[in-house]
Image 1 (cartoon, rainbow, N blue to C red):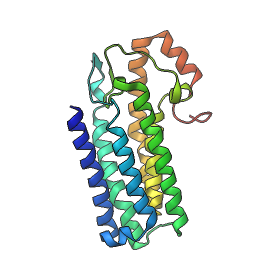
Image 2: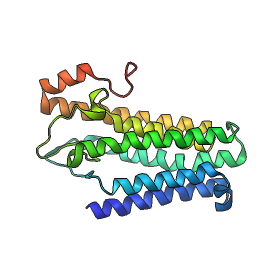
Image 3: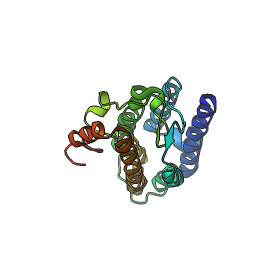
Image 4: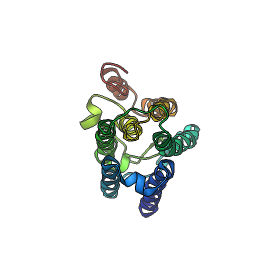
Length: 217
């Protein structure tokens, strides 16, 4: 399973950058921007780091299968986000001028990637791409989970906004923020499952933490 996940991860990254090159019009145009070259290095680095994690797609002992539609929504948004910002960058539609914007985007991708991968290492084999209770599952309230309940999803949003800004695309920022729709549905499912499994322990944790952004949400 882990080897299949590794192959899938590599394929998805290649697809993402392939769509971006297509959107920009050519590989030469893509490589003419140092921030976009840096984006490739950042993506490759996080991809390699992910190979050492224990993340999985296990349905565990108990899974909420009703939210699997979210994968389709995230996939569609991901494909659009890979192509559209690069395309609007090329045609100059609703873009923010300046290479500084691209570098800010790269910085946000780094921050988002760190927020996304850190929880995977903290949870170990309890981290699943599915909403499921794993064998020996315990409630983790330390590290990135000490203040927010969904740090990995925050990382996804931050990284997606960063990707859009790397191509100076305001349309891309909107697409990135649209990820909140399926992610909120996913968080609803996860919180309901954890509340039913851990009871008062989870309720106490819920009351002292934030869902996604400290002091805001």
